[in-house]
Length: 242
Ligand code: F6R
Image (cartoon, rainbow, N blue to C red; front, side, top):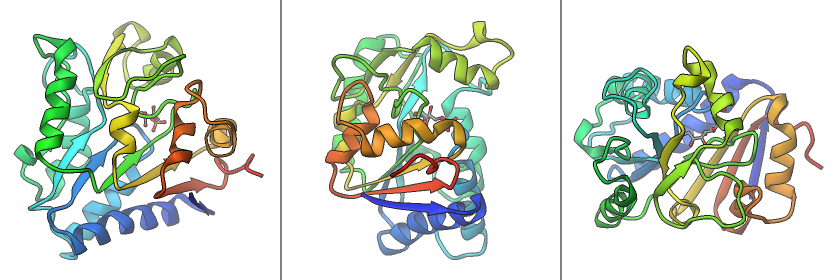
């Protein structure tokens, strides 16, 4: 693992944006795996700036998002589709039909995961997967458990995850109880993974994920088995690393 620690969020965003933009400059047909949440926003803003300055085009890029809540109506401000449109897609030249997010309103939620995996396999391997990290070690919405699923699947969200995400809703009652997420197997198939973590409140889980035992109890620890992971940390998140 290549672990990089940054003094400021601006530096972290620049390097993160640069990794993605360089990949797309070298391979305009790149397939990106994208994350939502507060962590990648600064990196997406950096990408928008790079696009607006004429240094990169996303016209031929395909993207697959990690996850989506179940049951939020289309256009709901907190759905991950709306998030992606607002935070990135509407500001760059990627055609929306080349952007994929699991359908949290699929009639058959149990088979939506298989449909999504099928779409990914007909596209091609993800070149770069961007990940944030949950306080409990989740990646995507793969929550700590005795067993983890490999492919995209329906998941019950842990109360701690719903509580962490309640800040985006009016109250915790509005936070969905289920989501569809890429599995750990899907994530680990990406050619390169960029894990981004910010903040003192994540320092302990960063240590467990990067330097602790590899265990399903901390899904992010499985990233230690991947041969091409870059980790971008602000100095607070890196605070407990040996
Ligand atoms: C988002 C996702 C989640 C978040 C994680 C951290 O698509 O899959 O794993 O990356 O919950 O969220 P933030 O960035 O809001 O702290």
